[in-house]
Length: 181
Image (cartoon, rainbow, N blue to C red):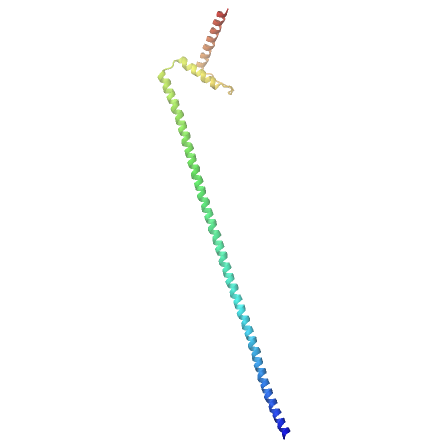
């Protein structure tokens, strides 16, 4: 009976062992499934974090690119406005310079004309004789015939005066010869 009892106990122990082994295997399978599920969830979470990071990075790059483009646009606009203002200032300065130069020339012309008018007035007040006028004409002719002109038209009054001067010069020369002899 002891043998039978040992067989029965062995059998019961074997059954208990098999049952525990099945439970252990089931728990091991569940544990492996849980570990796999946890690993899958970690992969999903990691993938989601990477996706969100990529989206956030892309949005940041997009905003940065937009800000850079807007900055360039504003800089270009400001440069264009500055150039426009500079051109306007240059044009106004040129205009002012041209006006002042023209005013200076006008004042110079006016001064010359006043001097000429004063000269004419003085001449008229002094009532010069026709001989003085002819002599002044001859002086002016000398300045006009300074060697640069190729043709000179001589007024008849000056021709008559030139003849008178040459006649006086000849008389003076003859008188000098007579006194030397």
